[in-house]
Length: 144
Image (cartoon, rainbow, N blue to C red):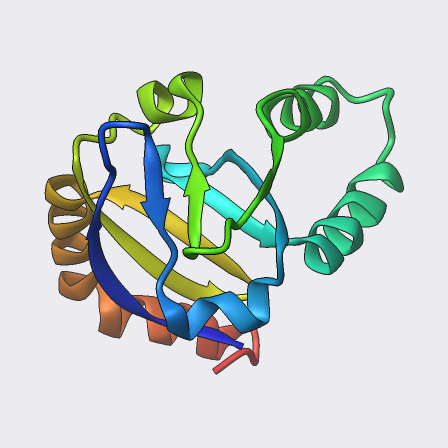
């Protein structure tokens, strides 16, 4: 399970050091793609395969399904974590997530999210204000 948040920097060669706590779970090969809320999602290969299979079962007759598949798959790249624990973040993904040099790498169960540090602080501040309400909503559906 991927949990926790870490502050790192993207170097001049557009590489991000993956926190050591995440490397074993992620493995050597990962998929980096556009995520929701304008962050990046990083999946270990096995989790990406599982997600891909779920999305493939959805009806292609619906525009929302086609659009979401395009969003996730066309924006995805396979990447390797190098011997020093770094992964290359392509320019188009850095631009999508508005990443500056300072980023937050957060473990979110089966994936890692990469956020611009300032945007992470703003986003988590908003979520923290609504945590009780979110817990109530999850309780209504039996998830919490």
